[in-house]
Image (tube, rainbow, N blue to C red):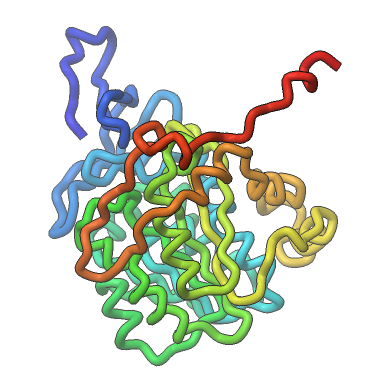
Length: 335
């Protein structure tokens, strides 16, 4: 995250973050910096922003912001937790600021929540400076923190889980975290699921404009699980539409009813816990627009161990026969 020259931009310091689109640069106006340091794994900055409150940046990219983190974490965690009949043992890979853990521990049925994060120093920074996010979840006796590579933990553990939540870095940059996105990793993870287990994954940017990485995750998961479903929502601090993925061998969200979800929320969490999620909103998140469904179905690579992710060509670069969308009936506009 590089500070821009305030003299050129007006009032106060500006911290810029580059979007995945190489042609655009986005920025967050910062009031103050609460913490900035380099850990063994990444640069961590906690800053108070004008629009989004206190925010966590890692290696220059925003990871969590006070004003809308509840939206992101409710969507990541609660669909799987609410759809499971009685989640007792939960695995979280990543989730350093503790908000994912907070949402898991809101369920009284949970007896154990194992959070595995490679960066102990970053978690300690969040414990101190991101209290609004974890709300004391790190100190819950049901929580167990493991500071280890997530892949290695899954390879070595003999524990079984009802729900697994993957909340790690937000790009396929062929770095170390890519080992948490491959077919081989998902095969390992499946062996650690109990029957009727559910996996929830933060699915990177996802819209009909930004879809290639999300689509690669979906294709890869479908080689391992029978039911893999995308959903998305606009997360303002992330500057766009963010994707999530639900994977299991049994759960088809098209069978869910909004009123049943609302009753489950009331039973499990009470009326006041969730700021955003209700039955209608959750089901709407799975309702992808026509073009998004189209690009999601385009062919592309499966993520494999040891194989760099090479995004397929843009739709506009493919041959016409591959990309022609159904034409709207012009008569529909004149009726």
